[in-house]
Length: 264
Image 1 (cartoon, helix red, strand yellow):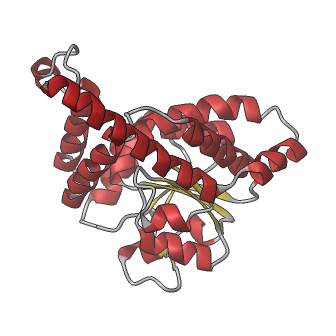
Image 2 (cartoon, helix red, strand yellow):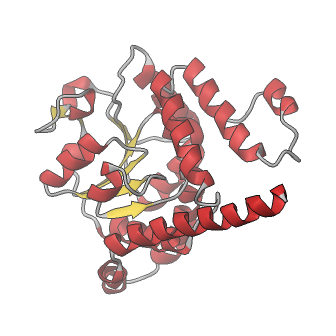
């Protein structure tokens, strides 16, 4: 969902924080339209903080994780991409493009099930071109074991072998793992429960991740299964998370040096 005309005019493109402010307004607009929960604004702000200390760019470790994630989705028998309000507000078209490219259904799954939210998110996805949307029919829902929150209500996720959970909460990731499902997470916080529990953790901003997944998917779809399996075998998620943490430490140390140069 783009900035509206008034918002766009308030933030000049020359502003060093233009993109950050742009997506911040997108999230706010999403809340006004029931797509994003009020708590989603807090979650987005927390993500902004981590993105800042990651240098607001996709690291090599994140690119490796994206490649492994795409390989896992292609190999999977029953993959699914979980969608919450923040994801639907930030990258609806990109998400639908990825879904169609890999023939993977999208499933709406919410922690805060405020009346009208599922319908609002469904409309956003449909307007972006989605035709295979799960999680909208209560009659086909089951409940995940070990969860008490609204996240327990799932549709195709209950049958899936690989679940991509961008901007996820840790409780459901843990529950999915206990049900022997492979979990792909997109999380800017490398120390969150989601990041630590997932099989493949992409420590990067969702607005950069999904377009990159589309780009990589176009190439990996040409590979044979054996080559895709090798990509997964070569991927080490523990090393991936440690590399992300090292990147944060290095960035902060450099910023400390640069800050004192400015202050002199």
